[in-house]
Amino acid sequence: MPSPRGISGHPGRLQGDVKVEIYSDVVCPWCYIGHTRFARAVERYRAKGGEVEVELRPFQLAPDAESNGEPTLTWAAAKFGGAERAAQMFGHVAGVAAEDGLALDFDHSIQANTFDAHRLIRLAGEQGKGQEALYALFRAHFTDGLDVGSREVLAKLAAELGVRADLGGEDGAAAVREELAQARALGVSSVPLFLFEGQFAVSGAQPEDTLLSALEEVAERTGQAVKAVKIAGADGDACDDDEGYCAV
Image 1 (cartoon, rainbow, N blue to C red):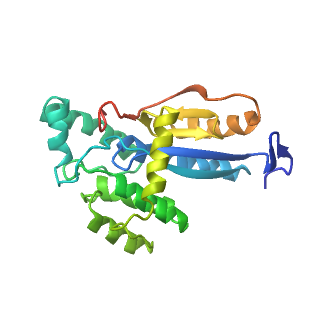
Image 2 (image 1 turned 30 degrees about the vertical axis):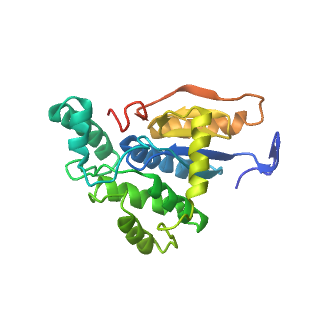
């Protein structure tokens, strides 16, 4: 168990407790990899007696994307200079993901607008199933070749998760719009981005050991009057909204 000594500036908190906000998009392969590595780092951190509170934050790499069933490879070929270049990019990230035990099938991946997917994550989170929804969406997009912009697909995923979500209405829409606006106001432009205690930023799909070190360092430094500090060496592979998807 963590020591009962409180962290400076956070009455009632236990030393070793860390809050992390993770900005990501469900069509971002580096986000899938980053979340997976972070989850393993959290397991190791908790084994040492620390605790982590995770808040999932939405980000859209391509907010103007249409969910029209277009294959991701077709879309990427037009955007990044041809099918060969697109295949090379996706082959690289798929190889990295495989080392982390993840299957990324870009041959069947479908380009999608992810706003409603973020609504599902938000609504699932309110029902204690945010992480489950996030990973279900990652698998749906990257492994199962499903259109995560389709409300029909999302409704089926919600039912499988046991999540109540009326995506045909406005459930969760206002909250997601507000959080997307907050991300823009903070200057978030690439994901994944891990924001520790609202102060310390770690960007990209960092190695597991780096993320564990960040948790430990932030636990020690929390309470200092420091804003937007980047942990040393904390820029990793990420998806940038300048590309509208992911130049991987």
